[in-house]
Length: 243
Image (cartoon, rainbow, N blue to C red; front, side, top):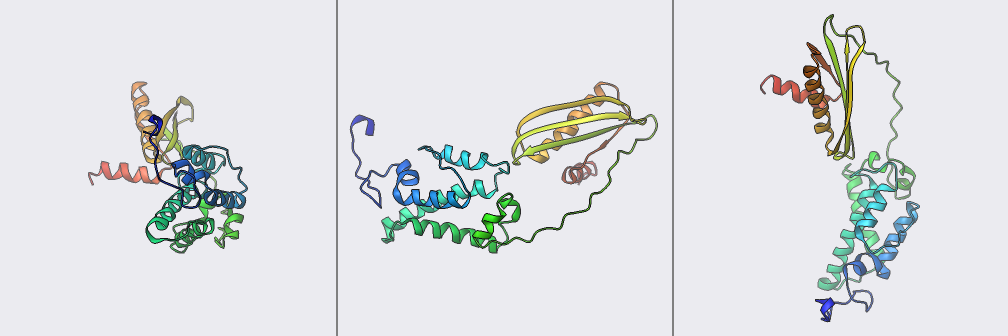
């Protein structure tokens, strides 16, 4: 309707500009102060855009530790949410719309998650120093001693299928692979493939399923399956026992 010449009376709560989505969440002076505050803590470059999608994606994928629950992914959504609630508080309760008010709401919510142990050191991976600045102290886990792992051959005349899968983000971009060897350790078949977006459990299950299909197709039987995904192993055992 705006493109056809209709005007709308909605005004920004902190200035006289028209309250569009991009103005409320990105362009207004109060919200710009919020983005700048947290950008300074995380040493982030503020990308010049009016797209909320671009902002969220930049915060997430500009770090090697990106995941759905990482602080770099969570923080933009918290800023957007509490910007929205502050705007409603201005309209319905007469509360001032300020940069400090939104920052305080975000920090209080983070402290609540921290106190409930929902916010863990894993979600601050790569940014534990920034967590300490915000008074979030996580106990460092002592490094574990390396364990020796070796491949165990199957019984004579048997084959062994070893599989693995990975999902970046869970769900996220996934891939799976496997290898089939005989009792002497000779490789008879190896495979790998991309799966698109999958959960880690589905990725591991697909890796096993594809490996079993290939083993039977190429006459590599009888065979045993070996993998390191405990959740999938428990699931397969429960189905096999009829539970």
